[in-house]
Length: 163
Image 1 (spheres, one colour):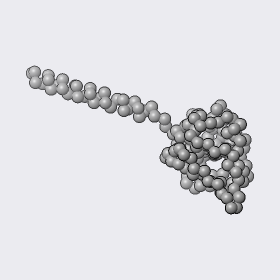
Image 2: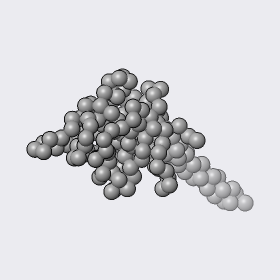
Image 3: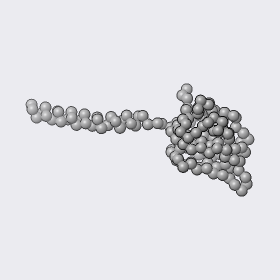
Image 4: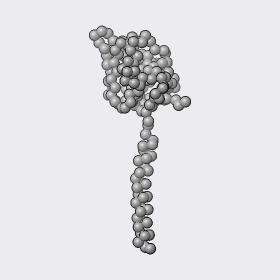
């Protein structure tokens, strides 16, 4: 009987030790910030930065992301376009075929990490492109002056209210 009891004790110690190792990993993984991923049928989303609500059109396919706001005449005062990048990356945005200046906001897992204010309308000889020095999961384009008007800065949170 004694050998079985020693064996049982050893098994219990090993199982308990494994649980002590695995539990913190599980807790860490479950508390990591998740980035927003749009549903396939989702076209618009209400966002909030510094208590300012923004109605954002969602660009999620490569074609939608490439086209962006190009060719449009304007954007509503509290409207924007949210680009879903799929994975964290240094996404370069350019002003090709833009008809109005914009502010460009790069977001990583809900936190603003890079901002370009007042990106100008391109000329025939100069199409500006902007690349952040940080990785991002999303990019938000809004009217030029929006960032300044609402005191938006790096480190601010972009909230996506749940329905």
